[in-house]
Every structure is written in C-alpha cells, then in structure tokens.
Length: 133
Image (cartoon, rainbow, N blue to C red; front, side):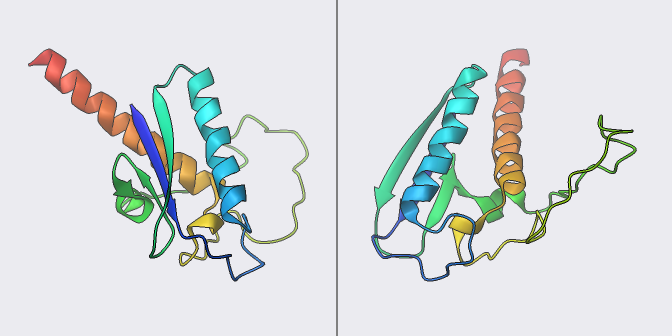
C-alpha cells in the first residue's frame, strides 16, 4: 500500500517560478498520480493535512529526501531509449531534474515517481521476504 500525505500550510507560495504555484495545484498533481497508480492496480491512498511548518510530502511516512537519499536518478541516453531514430523534442525552460528543495511543490515529476517506485519496491520486497520465511 502506498500512502501519500501532503502536509501544507494555508499560506500562499512565494515563488512564482516553481512548477506547481499553489497548494491546490500540488493536490491536483498528487491526485493524478494516485489515479494513475489505481489504474495500474496499485493500492494507494492520499491524505491532505493543513498544518503549520514547512510544506512536505510523505510517502509511507518518509519524506522524499529520505527516500531518494543514495539513489542515482539519471535520464536515459538516446541509444538506450525506445525513441532511437526518432527526432527529439526540443524543450525550453528549466532542466528536468532541477528542483528548488525549499518548495516541495517544485519537485520534478521524475523525482516524485522515482520516490514512489522505490517505496513500492521496498514494500513488495518486504512482503516477499515475509512470505518466503
């Protein structure tokens, strides 16, 4: 089970350059992720909590920096991707993995999905260990 909790204050976000410029946009983003996981038959739930303190996302009670600590997240090279031979999409703006860590709302989709995947893999590994013993 993937349990995602978004803890945030009611204060408006101060930086207009972040990916999700409001807590409402972040809630919508997380709900879309939950929907994608449910469509893939992954058991998950989402909780939104309004509190004082810094905004954060917890996945199975761990913060994203705790989850991704030690992970090497890298993008596929052209030779490794299934788009070999196709023209690349030209993108303007910030690099994909650029993240203003003081705003959880600025987390790149790639990092968020890697954090969820790691928690899911760890949970399944623990479940397999219990069944085999």
